[in-house]
Every structure is written in structure tokens, then in C-alpha cells.
Amino acid sequence: MTETTSKSIRVVFRVDASVDIGSGHVMRCLTLAAALRQRGCAVSFISRDLPGNISANVETAGYAVFRLPAGEHANPDSPFALDVAADVAQTAEILRRKQEVDWLVIDHYGVDVSWETPLRPLVGNIMVIDDVANRCHDCDLILDQNLYEDMDSRYDGLIPENCSKFFGPRYALLRNEFVEARKSLRERDGSVKRVLFTFGGGDASNETSKALEAWRLVGRPDISVDVVVGAANPHREQLQQLCSELQNVSFYCNVNNMAQMMAQADLAIGAGGSTTWERCYLGLPSITLIVADNQAETTEAVGRRGATMNWGWYEDIDAVGLAAAIKQMINDPQMMRDMTEKGFSLMGGGTSSGTVLLAEKICQISQ
Image (tube, rainbow, N blue to C red):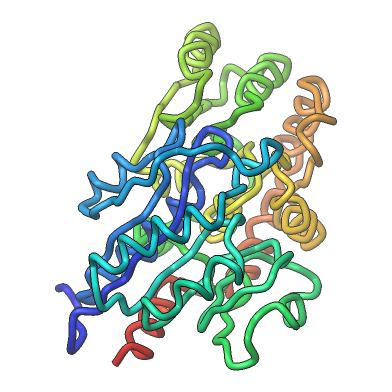
């Protein structure tokens, strides 16, 4: 049954996806969007029309997408860099057209107080989703779902004192399919019969190919492997061919049953980022490669807690080294069992969802 609020709350997300940015920011926004829509909110998105964007997926999910022109990178070295003045003007035009926007939700490393403050008069409240804590925000609520050693003080001086704070993995934006998968999750005994490779929607550096070469070196055709790539992956045809050349290896593109695939897997090899929390929530032992700056601190912290094997920066890892890590995991069932329990613990130990808590808070503030 759909939950409703006493009034239709209007929520607009400002978030981008591309080959370089990846799809994780949009995907976690879609998770929150679904929970808000279930509570009667009217939700739409504003995104730049960048190469490899997934705005079509957002529209397929039933949300309007206001597409901004791709434009030129303000800083060629950063895929998130914006021409702030132009982006503010274009976003403001859309907000004025929609009228009475209750919440503007921002998930974008290129946005800070210089973008947020000019738009504040056009919206009721501002929510920021962040995990790098390297700039000031003008916001009423902030979510950082990642794990850091200095979590409680990390945003001191960067956000208003009265800002509502949701910090840590227990508030991770997990889709409902993961909550349902956790309820019926089988006991993990540390044995490995199925492995999952997934490096996000873009995988610009083609870590999937490296992982497949590592698997060839492992030499275990008795173990099933599922390889999942996103629609924005520029190497997908090559990867599909590589998978066809390996025994008991299956190739999938742009799946919509990731929770089921993680629940069925006994070991995952993939990138850091928001999928870390999906793996921990389902107790899936993993080998994690760092493929972006914003993944480094969290992946290191999760590794220190024993909830993943942090294998470091992708550029420092070759197929031989990765194969050795995979063999170590397969041959150590106790390590696998310990990793499952530590993953559960990081996520709060229960089956509750941070997505629900956030959606309820947003609706509560808007009443």
C-alpha cells in the first residue's frame, strides 16, 4: 500500500551521471526518490546531458528529467566541475517553472554554498548528499552514508549549526530490493561457489577486464562467475567476448536484480563507492579496489574494520596480484565468515533501512 502525506511535497534532485562520473550518484538518488514517491511526494530530476548519462533510466522509472546542456568542463581535470553561474541560472529557471519546491536535493561534488545560497529563495529546504567534506554547504539536512574515523566532527564549520545530520552506513540509501533480500538471506558458511564481478556503471579504467584476467589465473572453472557491467561501460562488447572465452563465466549488462545477484554470490570483486554498503548489508565478503579519490578514505576504513579486503588503488594492482587475493579469500572460509559478520555490524546489525528514516524525516520537516 502506498503511504501518503497530508500534502503533496515537491522534491527536485540535482545530480549528474556520465562515463567519468559514473552512475552511483543518480542510483542512490533514485533510491531516495522511490521512498519519497511511496509517501506521496512529487519527484523530478535535473541532470546535465553528459556522455554516458542515465537520464533515460530515470525517466523509465517514472520521473521527469529536466536535461541541462552538457556545456564545457570548468576544469578539464574534474568531471564534476561546473560553470556555477550558468548552472545556477539554468536550475533557477526550472525551479521557477515548477513553483513551490519543498526540497532541493543535491548530490554533486561540483556544488557548494556558492551554488546553494542563490537558489535558497526558490525552495523550502535544501538537502545535500556528500561524502568528501571538502567545501561549505548552505543546507538544512545532510547525508553522508560513508564510514570515517572522524565522522562526528567531519563537517564542523562546513554546514549550518542547525543542520540535521545523518552520518554513517546505517543511513545508507539502499533500494527496497536489498531490504527484501536481507530478510530471506541464506546463511553464509564461508564456502565459495559463485563470484560476482561489478565495477559500477562506467568502469572507465576497465577494471573488469583486469578481474577477468585474474580469474583466468585463478583457474577454478568449477566456480560460477557473474560479470555485471553498466550500460555506460565503453568496454562492454570486449568484456562480453572475454566472458565467452572463459568457462562458467556469465556476462550481464544493466541488470535490475543486483540484490538477488549479491545474495546468490559468495564473494564479490568490485570498486568502492555506494555498492560497498549493499555488499555489507547482505553480508557479502568482498575484495575492493579504489578507483576514485572519493572512495579512498571509506574503503580504507571499511578494510580496517574487516568488512572487506581493501586491495588499494586500481593502478597499483595487476591481474597477478588480484588473483592471489582471490585465492586467499577462497581458501579461508573463516575469513569469509568473519567478513560477513563485520559487514552486518557496520550496517547496524538489523534489517531496517536508512532510506526509510530519511524519507520520513523529509516528510516530517515539510508538514
